[in-house]
Image (cartoon, rainbow, N blue to C red):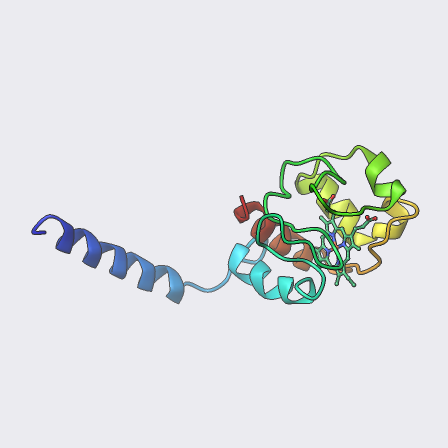
Length: 125
Ligand code: HEC
């Protein structure tokens, strides 16, 4: 117990300090979580929970169209994209031109929104 209490208070202090820092301009997962409010209508962050769109838990690093139990468009299934910073950025800027025939039509025109939401997606391991 004696060893745990100081560790907890250090964690509390660090947590408070981080929370007080201003948001970074690019690739901020906390800001990205707010951007993700535009995605939650269709996408869950719970593994295996598919809504109108597939669950995005673990999407970073996985192959496009590979969430089990989700009925993808033939276009996305065939796209053979590995989702990383670059491919997600391209897709989210304009899904329909990136993957012709995809069922996802919502885009993020602002580069900063994309960077932030991609950082957030990266945390959904
Ligand atoms: C109106 C519903 C809707 C909204 C809102 C939406 N999406 Fe989607 N999304 C979809 C659908 C449907 C698919 C599957 C597309 C297909 O099969 O062609 C998809 C697919 C994806 C994929 C590919 C996943 C995979 O497993 O290959 C990513 C990444 C993605 N969406 C990210 C986002 C992000 C980030 C947002 C918020 C900015 C968002 N989507 C908002 C409906 C939506």
